[in-house]
Length: 473
Image (tube, rainbow, N blue to C red; front, top):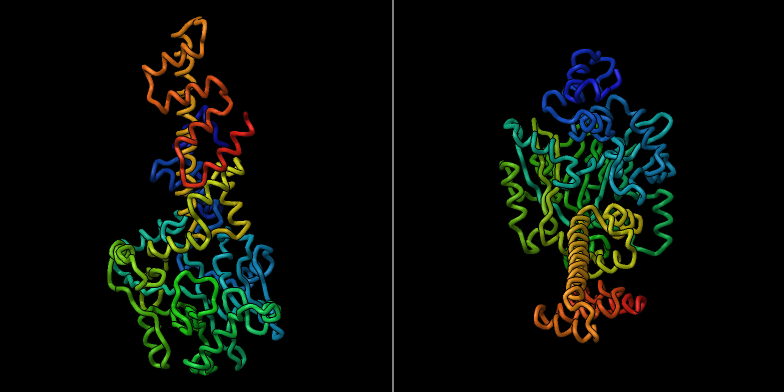
C-alpha cells in the first residue's frame, strides 16, 4: 500500500486508502485519507496533522479521557521528565510544566497546570484549569474555536482576565490545601521556597482567604470541588499590572465539580461565590459572538482591564472551551518586562548571526527564560524589522558595488583613476551615494558597514557598526 508518485497522484492515493482501509483497524490513517479527499489537500500534510499527538483541545473530550482512564493519564504525567512534580507528606503530588517545556507537546501536558493526584493507585484529587491557549497562539486552537463559534447552541461569555497568579484551593480528607500552579502547600518545593526567603505565594493565598474569604478555608464548602482564583498581591513578581500597594484579593474564576466532572459555567461560579461571600469574576460582556468578544477586548487601551478576557463557550451549565484574548496595552507592557525592544533583539541577532533563524532565536529565549507565550509575537516583529533592515543594507551595498564597476568602466584607463572616478560620480550620484562608492573604491571590505552607518536602525547601533568596521580595515 506504499505511495508510488509515479503511478498514482496524492489525491488518488488518498481515495484508494479511504475506500479500502479498515477504518476500525487504522482509524488515524483512514481519517487522514478521508480529510484529504474531502478537502483535496496534500495527503502527507494531512497525515502529519493526524499524527500530531496534540489533536484534542475541547474540554469535554479531555475530561472524559481523564475520567475513564485516570491510571493512563496520571501515570504519563507522573513519568514525564518535562513536568515538575512536588510531593506532600500526605502523599499528594502536584504537577506542572518545567522550564524545559515551554508549551504542551503531548496531550497529557494539557492537564498538568497544577493538577493534584495520588499514587498507588493513581487518583485525581484536584483539577484546576486545563491549558488555555491565546487565540492565534501558533494556530493551535483557532480551528476548534472558530468551529464552536458557529454553533448557535453554545453561549459565549467573556469574563475579565486579572493579572495575578493562579490560586487553587481544595479539600482532601477534611483538610483544605492551597496551591499555585507549581507549589503545593506543605510540599517539599514549598518548604524549600520558604527557606529561600522569597515571597511565599502559597502563604499569600491562605492569608488573603483568612483575612477576607473564610469560606475558602471551610472543608464543607470546598468538598468535591476544585476552586481556582486569581490571586493579587503587591509582592507578586509575575504581574504586568500594578494594582497599588497593599491591595490583595482572591477572585474566584472557576469551579471544577469532581463528582459531575465538569467546569461550571460562569453564571454558576458567580452565584456560588456570591452565596459564600466571595469575590466572583466580573463579565466584560456575555451573550455575544466570538468576533464581538474580540472587539470588546481589543478596544481597551487603558488599565481599566488588567490583562484581557477569557472567551468561554458554555453549554448546559458547563464550560466546554476557553481561549484567552489579551489587551494591546498588556501585551506591550509584557514585552517591555522582558526587555523585548528593537534595540535588544537587534543586538542579540547582530552578536549571534545564527539567531537570524527565528526558530533558533526562539529556542534561545525559551531556554533562558526571556519570553512568555504572549511576548513571542513582539519578538517576531522586532526580529523581522532587523532582518528587513539587514537585507536592505545588503541590497544597497550590492547596488553600490555595481555602480562602482560601471563608473570604473566609464572612466577607462585614466591617468589618475581616483580623481577621474570622483569627477564622474559627482555628476551622476547623490552626495551620500558618492561617499559610499568612493569608500568602496578605497576599501570594499567595509562597504556593508558604511551602508549601515548611513541607515541607522536605532540610536546606539553605530557603536556596534564602528567596532565591526574597524575589524575589516
